[in-house]
Amino acid sequence: MTRQSPDTIFKQDFIEGIAVAPWRIRSVNVLPNYCLSVTCNEGTTGTVDLSQLIFSERAGIYSALKDEQLFNQVRIELGVLTWPNGADLDSVWLYEEIAKNKVWCVPR
Image 1 (spheres, rainbow, N blue to C red):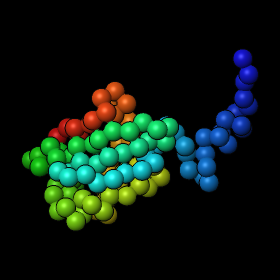
Image 2: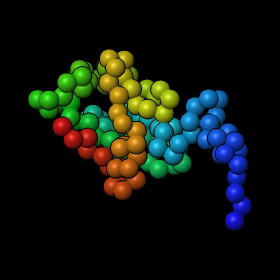
Image 3: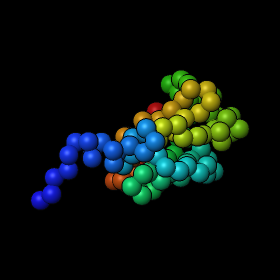
């Protein structure tokens, strides 16, 4: 078994200073009904359904995403899905759910 030095592993896990962890989001596309199609760094793909969360009584910061214009402004910052109002999603949890089920209905 070939072992890599910690320095080599560290360099492989970062590109231009950004961690290349498998759970980081590589691409996102907006789908109808408050859903997103996502691809993670190592190729895992799936759908994130935010509709239950957004329309929940306890939506908090996510309630602003009812505005489709705001929802459609989703972007990727350092591998994390974010919106201009400060809302974001836990990429590790997202990755684990779509790796298992291909669809993640974000709980409310």
